[in-house]
Length: 278
Image 1 (tube, rainbow, N blue to C red):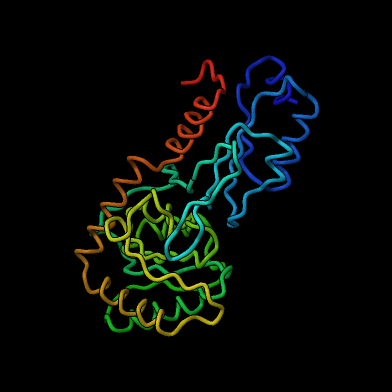
Image 2: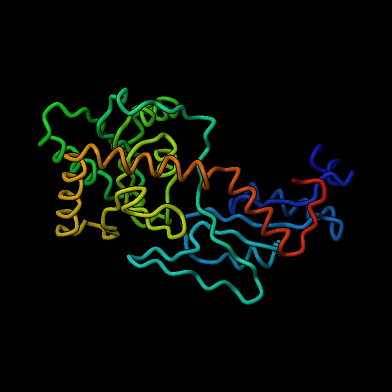
């Protein structure tokens, strides 16, 4: 009721359809149905893992602009998706939320290698086993490794803040992960198969390992992952260099505020009046 009142009173200049999931689309459909031509303009933010363009949403909601996390096809050489003619499309990766993370000085970090995952991708157990095998070559290394859901979210964020190297794995499920942005925001060095152009740079902000989307896992690829992780763990200076570069870049250009500003900027560029907004 409060949202409807705000729209009636002219307090809403823009509706951000922030998900392709049913609860968001149902709410947006109800607003458009009830207000008709008086409904504020819509922009659509599709943050799901799939690469296809949601033509059904474009037809149903007629967004002025669409933002898509998986705007780049997820290959070894990412390439930009071709949007429908006349439909403004922009890539929009996940982002960093700073208010839930606290900087911990590098010397005070107590976890040398963090590799804890939900069991949502078939190669994560192999990645955990690889991490544990490599870590055994470094006596005294403090390791947290598990697959499943063994940690509450608050505990998980605390662990990231105290970790030096964090393993991130998307494995073909989208182009980036929330973990990637959480770990860089926490000031950790990230070892990842992240493949999203236009955000952080492999070799400068994080260490990138080969992408493997097979079901069983390619042995040659996993041999390279083993070797790369070994090289990273034996070079603490490199860990710290990557961690610091990523931390500063994320803070400068990839917070949730930056993403929100980008959405508003593109909405204005495509004719949406946002009077009263900075």
